[in-house]
Amino acid sequence: MIPFNRPPVAEKSFAYMRQAAQEQNKICGDGMFTQKCCAWMEKRFQARKILLTTSCTHALELAALLCDIQPGDEVIMPSYTFVSTANAFALRGAKIVFVDIRPDTMNIDEQLIEAAITPKTKVIVPVHYAGVACEMDAVMEIARRNHLLVVEDAAQGVMSSYKGKALGTIGDLGCYSFHETKNYSMGEGGALAVNRPELAERAEILREKGTNRSRFLRGQVDKYTWVDIGSSYLPSELNAAYLCGQLEIADEINENRLKSWNAYREALLPLRDRGLIDLPIVPDECRHNAHMFYIKVRDIEQRTELIRFLKEREIGSAFHYVPLHSSAAGLARGIFSGADHYTTRESERLLRLPMFFGLWEDAPEKVSRTVEEFFL
Image (cartoon, rainbow, N blue to C red; front, side, top):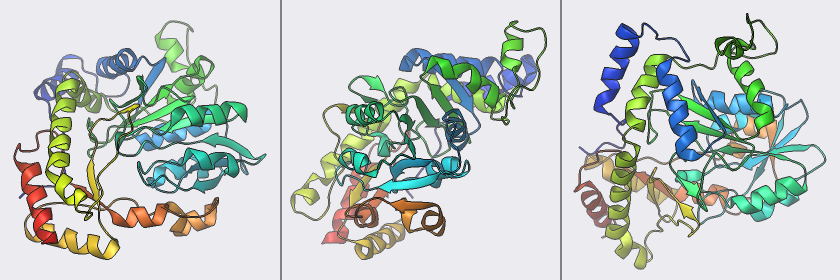
């Protein structure tokens, strides 16, 4: 069987977990391995400040707090995204304004953002689908001209870049995921990139249950106390240790996934050329991380049949998001700005194929042959 996903594993991760528990006697948050992970990302991504969190969901919630979202504020984002993107802002009372996507990248259509802005708009949330960057120059220009904040949902974008800049470091804030399904994993986990220096201290406070404990640990105050709202967004040191081992071989993981991605593309080009499927498009200014390989078929009925066909041949596959604007919560807490030309249609065509670190070398060819058999 070729499974759809397997979490990444690095040999050193287990030694680091033992070290945290047995040698450091430290398994709660913000220990040596948490600090190592944050320092690695700050250096590699040239980020001002990285804070490891319990999930990307919590990173997004931290971002919403730092943006000072109030009831009635409006936040612009694509409908084709995971529920956490919207939930983080809906929890603060925001109205979610959904914008249509581009059919080439499945990212928010930057040309439609301006029309969705009202006097109540406070934040734009571009979501970098499949680790392929949104058109960030346009997004940032619109935001600055309209005095809006930008929170990058880079859950799938670790090790991806836009014009040489790491995803998550371009907007005011950026959010990463280290969930089991991501390129680098700590089981459940995430990180917040704080790209505005004036937000860094408050980000630490919010993450530490609303206390100034981080300043205390640095010796900047002689005791710590409750100074703001907040929650416990610190991951276990065991999770951080597991992630640390993978970050040390990040390039190996990235290159392995890219090799599989390129093998899929090469093997499936004949089907694309015959007009039977569409393949992912990566714009020239984007460097992606092979987070996923997907194809697009004719419609939802054909996709359902192909999933069944692959399953019968012991190949895992999956569709992705059901657009949020069509969900019960989306209808209650948001609106769709303009027309839904592509969001629903393209989401119903998309099918994800097996992709993970260590995918067998012949798997992309085998999966591609099976897809080809379906169309015979």
